[in-house]
Length: 85
Length: 150
Image (cartoon, rainbow over all chains, first blue to last red; front, side, top):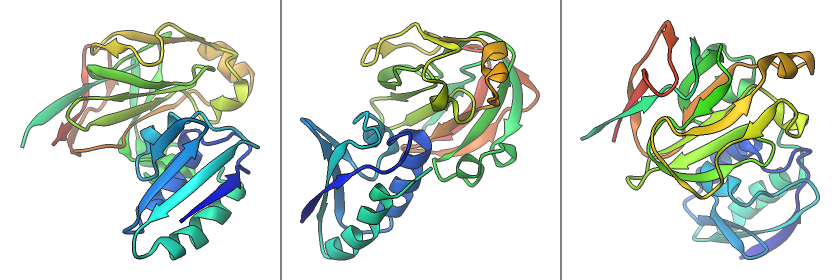
C-alpha cells in the first residue's frame, strides 16, 4: 500500500530526522520505500533516504509491502507529517 | 569477517558519541560512531567509495562502499540551519572518492559565531559493527577513527 505525504519536518529529511524515521521503519518486517519525483529510497537505510533531498513541504510517497504494512503506515505517516527534528 | 579501517575525516579531538549535545546522535539513533571536535578546515572522505550524498549546504555527507558499509559525516550540530554559511563544497555528489579525498571546507569561527556547535559526529549507518575506536587526537585522512568488523 502507498500514501502521498507532505513532509512536516522543518529541515526536511536531513540526517537527524532520517535517522529517527529509519529507526521506526526498521521495526517493521514490511519493505518500506520512500519516493520523491523519480527517485526512490530504501526506507530502512539512512543514506538512501538522504539521497532523496526531501525538504519541508515536499510531497513524498510512502510505500509499505508486507504483512505488517498497515501498522507501518499507521506509525510512519504521522512521523513524516510531524516534526521529526 | 573482515575489518575495515575508517579514517578520521577531520583533524581534532575524539569525543564519545554519547557525549554529543544532540540526543538523536548521542542515543545512536542515526548509528554507532565517534565524534570529533575539529581543529582543521577541511573534511575528507573516511573511506574509499561513492559520495552518495553531499548536502548542497555542505553540512553533511555520506559515503557508501561496495561492501555495504555506509558512513555519514555530520559537520557540526543543527548546521543545516546555516544553509551553507561557513561551508564550501569541494567534491561533487556522486563522485568516487578515496580515503582522504577532500570533500568540504569549513570555517569553525563562522559556524560558532552563528551560534552552532562544531562537534562533528561520524556514524556508521550500513553494514558492520564497530570493534575498536580511537581516543585522544586524530589527523584527517591519516589516523584510524574506528574499525568496523563486517
